[in-house]
Length: 344
Image 1 (cartoon, rainbow, N blue to C red):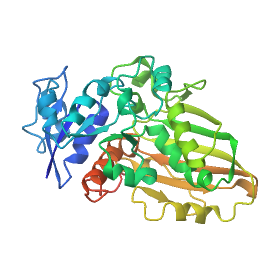
Image 2: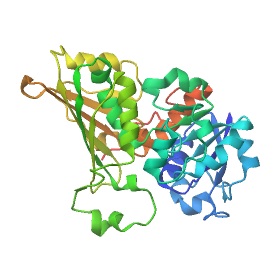
Image 3: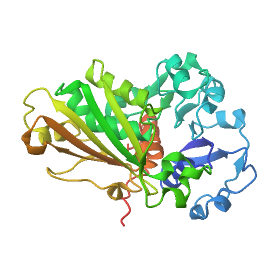
């Protein structure tokens, strides 16, 4: 049994961590922090957790108490993990960061997209990008894991087989993505109000979104060459879920694309390549640490279309974070996450 700390546990990713960890046979949540909710019982803020965390109370961040944990999750806005990460790592605590603080390997690029200097550039060399389907062995040994963003997870998993096999034109890759409103976080924002988001859909960040450099970084690593990506996210009137429709132009006869995807993800516990002709739905992964994929070649032409769906709070955030924890501590990779998706 290992002791876990969670920094910033009042948001959607924090409560999702608690929900999933409540089912984990090898984990005890020892401390959860929140400056704004310090002194409040977790079950008072989240009644769905009654009976699981009845004695757990939010507390102000305390580096000494967090350092006594075997691992600490950061479920915080960007910039917060920078301040505590170095001190906790020096004490031997392993860190899993769900924010964007260590996803980009270039500190200057991070500063450009997040509008502030990077607070811990000296730690970037230690950070392992936490996409298990790519970095599984490095994650096992990591002291600091940067959990991928939700859009980057859906897009990268959908494009990996095509890029690794160099089957598509790297100068023209398109990711058309839709997200539920929880992707914007729990904070009160006018665009996320029911009257604003319901019965409507809109694009945003079309000229540049913070997830763009992260996605591009992963695609370049997969292809081993520069990749020109057009990424357009959309807000849809659902609570959870991401649907990514990915387009690539084939540069040669690809052979059996279905077989290519099935082979690439054979044995991957968090990726489900669906039968040929499938159209995966976001509701089929709700609450599950799973990416469902389908690959199409319309009319047998030179365009390949990949459909990728995830739950943005699970495989796109907290579930993937726990998948990383399991790898880091030698547990079953899907421990705590064996339950099937919720339906309806």
